[in-house]
View: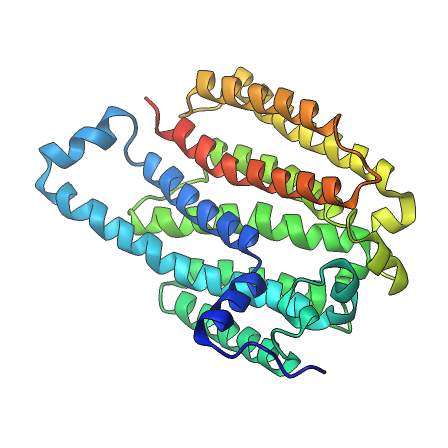
Amino acid sequence: MQSGIKTTPLQWFQALWKFSRPHTIVGTSLSVIGLALIALSTQYRGGDLFTIGQTSSTALVFYPTFLVQIIAALAPSLAANIYIVGLNQCTDIDIDRINKPHLPLASGEFSFRQGVGIVACTGLLAIGGAGIQGLKLFWTVALSMVMGTVYSLPPLRLKRFPFWAALCIFGVRGGVVNVGFFLHFRSLLGGGGPIPLKVWGLTGFVILFAFAIAIFKDIPDREGDLKFHIRTLTVRLGGPTVFRLACWVLSLAYLGIVGLSLWGLPATHPGWILSTHLGILVLFWYRCQRVNLSSHLQVTQFYQWIWKLFFLEYVIFPIACLLP
């Protein structure tokens, strides 16, 4: 095992940034902030958001306090994110040398011991940081970490089984994150009662989206997974079949949220939801028709673009909740 070749602090932090899988860091950050804003929309909406600070002396303190609470929740969430993706890299070094040779453990920028140390430290920070902020945040972070652990770590190593691997991914990104963070932030705002329909609508959308990501991510990794007997859907069915399945699942997610909006999604702006989601769906099909499935580079770039659509939802949907 290589001992790690990075020596300067700058190089070490650059390797840590790659180790953290930046696209997942962006996704986690936007989802936490977006759900905080959705929770805020259950208390104030539309013009109230922009006038209450001018008419209420307490509001002048309220918004900076809430911003601090968002940052406080982000810290253990990002630590948990690094724990999950780092653990996966620690258990997949040989596979990553084929599929993702740029990652720090696969390339030798970090040694296995350094990887384990980062995973252990971020895991402890995540549990400790969430625990001091209340049970709702603690269970949200803890459940995410448990599912991330059984996904990667033997003897379960659920990533070997397509159904269970997908369940881990969309279970965390869809169910645990959306419901857990919404309840955490709503409790900080003093709200209560049943979870609003708009949160369930977003949760359903993200579950479908995360399922598509879960099966799509294995298309560029077919060579390494096949060699190490990881029986993903891509290994079993082939890249083109899984690509088409992922595209139709994503389309169902967008059409589903459009249908909910037409049916009537309370406390959201229907015009904003319809125009944005239908526009993205048209652009998505335009892009997917132009992907050369025999090109590893094009498939990987398209997969990264799908992640950007995932990020975008946590901008679009909170705006729909906040608009009057």
